[in-house]
Length: 210
Image 1 (cartoon, rainbow, N blue to C red):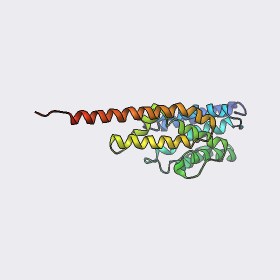
Image 2: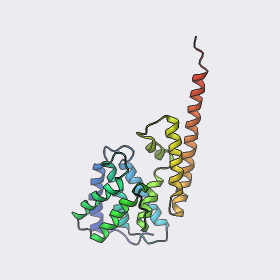
Image 3: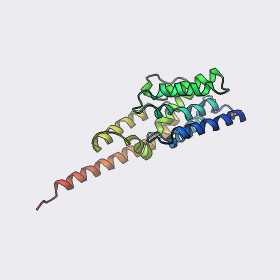
Image 4: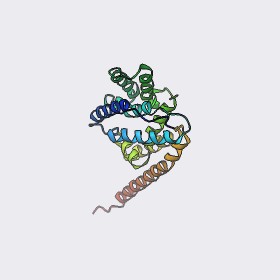
């Protein structure tokens, strides 16, 4: 549960951070500004549904900053650490206390399994789950196939395996409840696309060349 409302001072800084993030993500593809907003929405939805106390300022900042490293890391393998460094530099230029800044930076670093540092705090786990949820469903599938190399079948089968892994790694029961329908949607779409691909191959094999 969210422990309190944001203060006017916090709201003002969040607006400044939002403008910064929106500008940096304007040319992003799969991890664009709409993804950032989706992760923030999921984060707040999870936070409101769980019993653990959640700091709304820490959570909101962490969700907004979570993929800033993607802007500077094309393959994404180090984007958690790169994003953490950028977030740290940004927050040092603000009034945010060092203790709170560290909590926000930890969210950014630990929101992705590529960092190989599991999330620990409730806010870290929430953003981790929220990011995973936005990889599910139609939009998540579209985001996931953008820029991927390989045959259509290879890409689709790879995405299907990864989305199952993402779903199984969710921390909160409410996250799994939110993700269940999205995961089922992912499986159904992949199934339909693979069937359509098979039909195309059959059609090609049936062509009568004069």
